[in-house]
Image 1: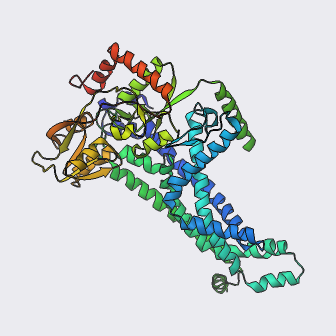
Image 2: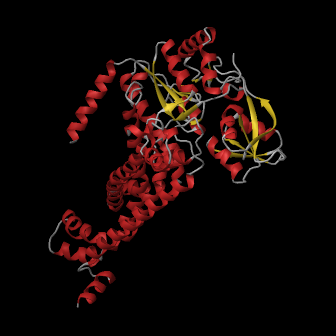
Length: 292
Length: 239
């Protein structure tokens, strides 16, 4: 990166440290923090949407839809995460490629041959000749979808409970005013349920932050992958040989996660105060008394 | 923004459709001097140089992909890449699930490295998971302690979890030499496996023929030996 870094083995001290910390590999390490934040930024709303859909479906009076919503929450919550991140993603990837092969391949033979999964090259997602960035984007997309599916099931359960916690009398009053079911749902139920959902959702957010190292199982190079790779002992085969420094890299990750969860706590506390404002709940009552 | 992304995606896909077919080469990227991620973040080492030359001679366009060692065979079978060049020895167990080209690295010695010369090699010995070395230690009667990466198996000796590490001598050589006498080779080196070959799906017979022919030309004109000498030193086993 810098001219002084052209021959890393001849430099030492601060210059060495500066060159070391700006090597191409370290730049990728810094970018992986962005990857993790991007994953969280995409997954949280996606999981919330899945959860909302699941909870709404579970409340439906149309039995098959209600069973679908309840089944989604029950099955996904019951299956260990590691199975989702190891097995489900491979199955999803192969399933997508199989569907694509039905559309684009001439030869429709069954793709699962013994241990191999074989579709024609045109059916590969992304195509083998696509540049590496598409392969990474696809892997990342699969990761977002899987995270959203898993955390959406937990969110569905939280939101379903929150919807049931809104006092029945409020809904009946709205109906007495002549509102339709849709209007009651939009105007009365949804605005009030968040205060009941927030403790559960904030828990999910914290768990989601800590679950991001599962990204490596999906082939996305996240911060934990790079910390392990960069921290491992390096011989003279590398430009910057050093002993085992994994402890320092993982300490840096520890600080990152602690700072991030602390910031989240502060933000969530503020949202909680705002949602409680004017509510007929213990939290709302405490706010009213404090102001009085 | 969404339309822009979609448009770029379409351009990329249609542009790629005209490009030549790409053979994706999978490697571990944590096994110097065979393969490692250099400080620029690229795959480097003996196998990088060999693989690039191999593709040149077979007139193929190749691209490097890194994958965890533990899942490197399942991902080949599932079609995420087309060939494995990851210091993978040819063994009967692996031959049962994938195909290999002829070897591009001769059968080499594996060795024990430990902190002192008088350790008991029937105690706890560390090795990388799913390697011929791990299988050998398990059969030797010692307790095998397996790690996901070769680097972690060496670290286990330094922090006392294992009395010795068993790995390719060529991998351990640099680590032992640079440990300032902390680590040393103990016991006798052991010959394992049938050399290192390119791992391929059993159905990919066309690619196997191309690679076999290219490896043969590299053996015949001595360029493979020169490459081995460059990365492993003058004393390395050659063809």
